[in-house]
Each structure stands twice: as C-alpha cells, then as structure tokens.
Image (cartoon, rainbow, N blue to C red; front, top):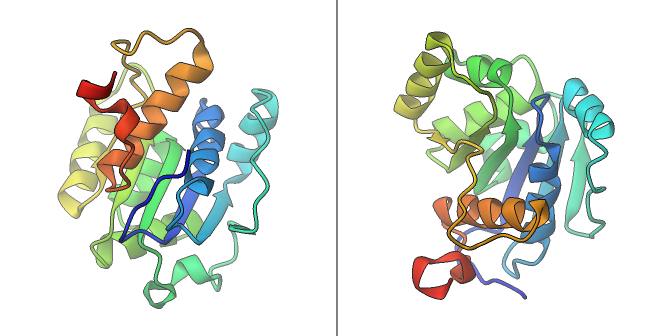
Length: 192
C-alpha cells in the first residue's frame, strides 16, 4: 500500500546502538512506500551497525530513494539545514544518543542532523529503547522534549491483536510515522 503525505519528502533515519534495530529496518520499509517521500538518508552509528548484525535484523530494503551516509561525515547533506530534510527519526535511539541530543552535541552526523532538526523546528522523533529509565534518562528526555523533540518509547500496543513480532513492530512504526505527520490510516482506532 502506498501512503501519501503532502509535506514530508526528505527524511533522515538514524539507527543507533540500542537493541531494536528491527524498528529502523521496518521504518525504512514503510517510508519507501510513502509516495511523497523522495529521499531517505540513512545514518548508522558504529554500535548501531554492530547491534543490527548481532540481532540479525531484516536487511534494509533497497530503493533508489535511499542514500547511506557515514556517521563521521559532518560535511554530508543531513548536517545542514539548507539540505531541506523535513523530518528525522532515530529508531532505536540509545540513551547515549539521547544524552548527546539533549546537551546539544554535534560530534557525529546523527547528533548534528538531530541538532539541525531542532534548530529548524522540524519533527525529530526519538524511539528510545531502554528499561528501566534512570533519572538521568528521564531528565534527558525532558530536555530533548523542551528543545522540540518527540520522545516515542518503543512501547508496543496490543489492541490490534498482533499475531507475531513483525506485526507488533509494523504497527508501532506506523504509529511513529503518524506522530511525525505521515498518515498511516490503517492503525487509527476506528480502522482496527
């Protein structure tokens, strides 16, 4: 199914070192199906790559919409507000990445791109993946929220009666896209 979103055409997807790399792979799969999305920039932290391999996540879908960027390249397009990216998702978002965003660090491309989203007032959705949260985690979530980020915990819901993990992940990612303004009508309450 192809989804239409009028305002979001250039999206950044970052995958960091928290467990749950299947969320990032599913996010890319769903974004490819969005007709209005013409570019998907993919950024992986070093630990994100390691966790992705360790968890044996489904490989990221191939598409002409996708460009991979080196996380150490601060001259890459996602590092600049003039590149025109409309939204950024970090899925999963490690607590280390959250801390960097909350404190305004720009020491790698993921953190710089997140900083750009905040300064440009564009959607920055952080799918935090940790349990339990420490006070430091909660304070960093508060700081990031005050700066304009959307904290989106990897807390699945069950009212759609998922039959397997993939359905659970897919529904949660669809909800995350809705939060950023990319309509996913099949997960709305009346359509379940």
